[in-house]
Image (cartoon, rainbow, N blue to C red; front, side):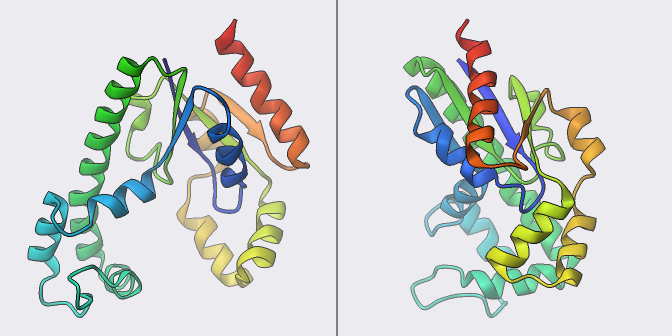
Length: 199
């Protein structure tokens, strides 16, 4: 089984790549964000630890779930709390991913794919067979973020500044999938990469 980690800047079009991969036979796609949300549901170890950490904050719904926008507001206005949350959630996500990888190997899956915003920063290269970088120019990413999310230039500048540079992505990733053109070109790049594992 091949375990691929997929990353790239905001607006690079990772979703289109992941949707295509998810529809291929023998490939399972996991999203780190979705795993994190699942692990923060009531009844989990993560939830209990976060309840201790954020018990006094106004971020709780009546049914005990997090009010996610309220939680985001708290952690983005307090570096210590954001770090504390990440120190609980990120290791739990990684543990889940390792278990999923082991299960996929036993099931004889052809390929497992993980998408994570902090794939490189969280050192997923240590558990993935290789990393793929979904590359789209800053100009095209900016256009997409304005059109699809209505972001201002200032917001986009702040997001770009908080992410890794193109050089960093390229340094850590074995394959680069160019997603600047139309989806057919991107699919051709993906199929070329996949064919190398099937030889």
